[in-house]
Picture 1 (cartoon, rainbow, N blue to C red):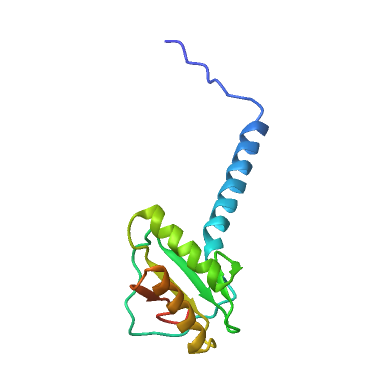
Picture 2: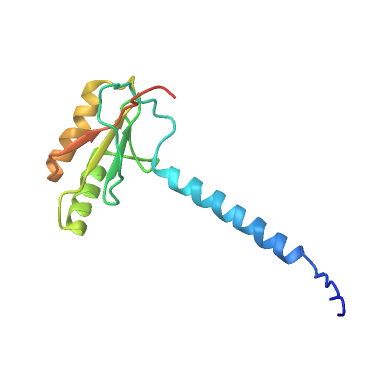
Amino acid sequence: MRKEEETYLSGNLTAMIDVVFQLIIFFVCTVSMQDDSVNARIQLAMAPHGVELTAKNPLQVIIDVDSRGRIYVGNSWVEAGVLKAMLKKSIADAHQAVPVIIRGDAKTAHKDIKRVMDVCTEAGLWKLEFSAYKERG
């Protein structure tokens, strides 16, 4: 019997390495875009006995209120009137109540959170949720 010759594959790996680097860049950019809806400057209060959030609703609107009482939606500062218009449009587009999560800074005065709650109820939303840390980490 004749011994089979070993064949070696050779070629330029530059194209494959370029594709791998492009995939890495794509995933890094995608991950950072998903986090844009959360304002990193908001330091949430602790609520160790609260219910943990398990699933994210794609219709939900996250409203951040910083320690000075400024309102942010998606890292963009908005006034109360603009927020009300945004919420009304979200309700009209979804044809149902839109879940709202209010993320208030631990140093935010209650009057500023109440102002956001009032805007939500004026827009037609009564079921509101609040976000806090279950444990420090």
